[in-house]
Image (cartoon, rainbow, N blue to C red; front, side, top):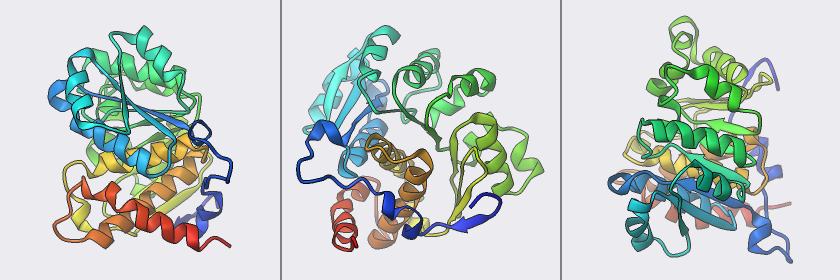
Amino acid sequence: MSGMAHTNTPELWIGAWPWPSDDTHKHARGALGCVSGPASSTGAARLSARSGLRIGAGLVTLFSPPGAVLVNASHETAVMVKAFRDTDELAALAGTCRCGLIGPGAGVTDETRANTLTVLKEARSAVLDADALSVFKDDTETLFAAIDKPAILTPHPGEFKRIFPDLLDQHDRETAARIAAERSGAVVILKGQVSVIAAPDGRIVRNTHATPFLATAGSGDVLAGIAGGLLAQGMTAFDAACAACWVHGELGLRLGPGLIAEDLPEALPELLSEFYDSRP
């Protein structure tokens, strides 16, 4: 479907959904590692981790700076928490993951820059969100050169302009997203009222299936976690991005007014059961 934008519907990706077989074990369902921010900014990564676990990743771990370990561990049960002190220790952790996710609550710091490059190098695939994008505002060449495996970038328009400063001023959103994906070598989700999902090979999908009630703190962290959880289970980056956007929108439509980000992953079991029961 290269060359024209399609509307995002389950028919585009549901056939690739990574359902477990009868003899599947947790290690076969994929490992997702989410890099936590410092002690005062841990909630975003926890939302991503929870969402990745709910969407089906078999093992989800928060990679935590030492000073944030107790905060994270006091909030988590099924999500594991492991400390790292430097990029060498993060590299060892990320190397065990089918997908590494970084950016939510990370901070725009030299540490985030180094940690992002480490995740891109060591994990088998990656989701970069929020601060993991903004930190490369003045050095996008280094970021794009490091993307040599399946990756999904999830910028809102402000973050998009930081790493692709010329595109939205010169092009419509679909063209801008397509050029961004080609330039970066990653699948790009340009978030908005209508999110645009673009692949480096020119495929474009428009996600109109959403609600303005998703405009709430932490909602994007949930989207990133859903995408990361699907990547961890072996979905392609483009399918994972399209599926994550539709599922995220569907959860918002079901929950409606009053939803907060914490509600979103808890609504996944009902939706996933419907998907499962409608398999051919």
